[in-house]
Length: 135
Picture 1: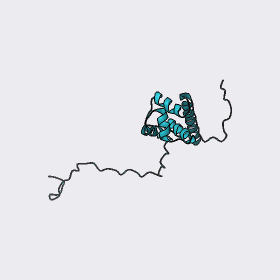
Picture 2: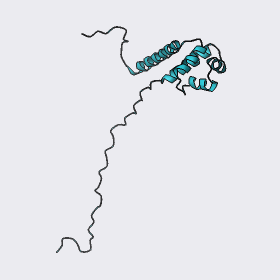
Picture 3: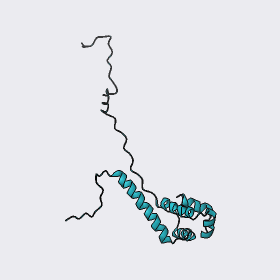
């Protein structure tokens, strides 16, 4: 004889019962993404545009002097194209700069950008203005 009632069906679950996950205690605010480093082409393009505008020259004037197309110079200034060293030297020369001057100005821009993003990330109470020696 069986222990079960004769009219009662035996049910076997196909999946085990799941236990609901506990709710988080407090919502975690999303982390701010780290500031992205500027691309070299963006830095060089900014310098080219700034120098051209400081001299009050048009894209066509500088492109003609550099012997490159005006749309290409525009794309360089907007950071859309990676230029060869020859093209950069030609564009810099058309603005009265040497290639070293252009790269030095781009390096200054990178340093300025890096300092501002580093300053935003660090939370020191006193500024660091000295030399640190370790023994």
